Image: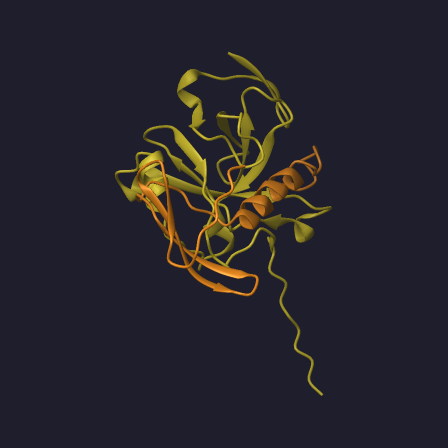
Length: 69
Length: 148
């Protein structure tokens, strides 16, 4: 992983068209701003992980559908 | 071609039926080709089956059949990826996690599966919202209010 040190109001640029700015720092919370083209998907990682886990869960169910439908 | 399926044994599939998930499905990024297997024309349920992996078959349902008020806005990224030109081109499904019975089964409203039927493109979109989560009960139990 690339590690960079940034101060408040400083940014990093990804792939020429995505800008991530540190807006606010408060204890262990950091507020970041992301400027990106509309087609770029931005997700909070914990939501992504939750969806992955639920997809795994969905495959653990019964193979016998007859008793359901 | 013949494919093995989780719920329907071996079946014949034509190329035109295949729905392409460009970035796979969360948890299964390599799985990019699925078909939608009906469970009968009257059923709100069907199966989203990988054509390459037998075990990978999700029970899916039309969420609006169960949650009339369900609504969300599609992100521009999804519209672009799925080449959606018209709202009527898309079908929305939600993945169901079966419990021991339907009353303990849940539906994932936070990550709807969007299919552009015109282009045969699909994606499980993830909603950046707290309004919906991954485990809504399929059958709404009527809450009994106890007074006193």
